Figure 1 (cartoon, rainbow, N blue to C red):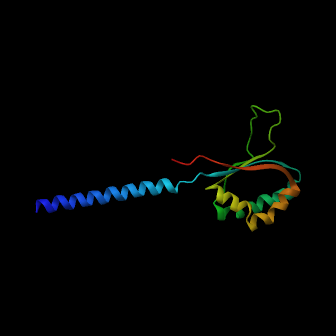
Figure 2 (tube, helix red, strand yellow):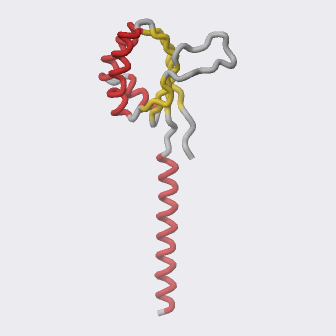
Length: 130
């Protein structure tokens, strides 16, 4: 009985270690770098631009896009040309970010932004969470 008990304990311990190891490996593989849209926007037609702003959240939702910065106060420390309006939108991955940018919903409102603002925008990949 003692040998069976030890064998059973060893098998259970081995299974537990195997499951824990597999879970750790899977968790590492599942981590993806977030992506951020960073935009410097100069609004030239506030009334029209408001239509764009109103429609934007619905385009972000399917891609889990969320505002991190939305035209808050800026302090320029190393430039003679401060940005007019800064926007930072976070996405879970670069694939989701690019998917949003090319989505039919966002394509439908891009012309509103183009006609009511001048902007510089780019995506940047963030650090993979630990």
